[in-house]
Length: 243
Image 1 (tube, helix red, strand yellow):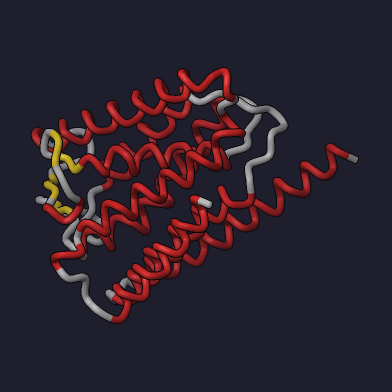
Image 2 (tube, one colour):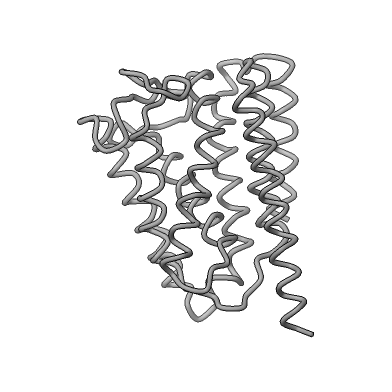
């Protein structure tokens, strides 16, 4: 159900943003978008990472991920380290320590979604793959968010005005926090867990195309194909193990 709600919200938002401009009174929709995405991810991950007896552990892990990412984002906003020098606008809602609270919620979704489809059989390899997935996400998301004035980079960088330190930090932060999630050997992620990531690539890829960011749009297509290829490969491996 949550996956369906998120998908409908995404399609409506995409049509609105592609053909019109988002009016100021609808800025709250940006926050709802990220909340729905992360909610959908959590629903898909509930049976994959957390069984009912471990619900309290689930909430602890979610809190640690959200709090850690929020504090590191705040550190960067105030000092320029480790992500780089930037500041958030009011587009994403209420700020905590200079960071929209929805950013921490988004981090939870990105890390859990990426870890869930990183079906490596040990935590170190899974951490490396999780880091790669979240960098894929940010390569598509960040240029569009910058163009839509979600945040502003002060000193610019090599990739659409975004510094390399941003992507390096995304990689290591996600990789490290993925160790908090249990390793599920032989478990198969739901189809929707792949689709959620593909939706995100499609959403920001089309918005990038509207802004004339051809490289970003091409990368979005490549990442969608890569994600779908990974889904098919994982499904084939699972079937082979069954037989």
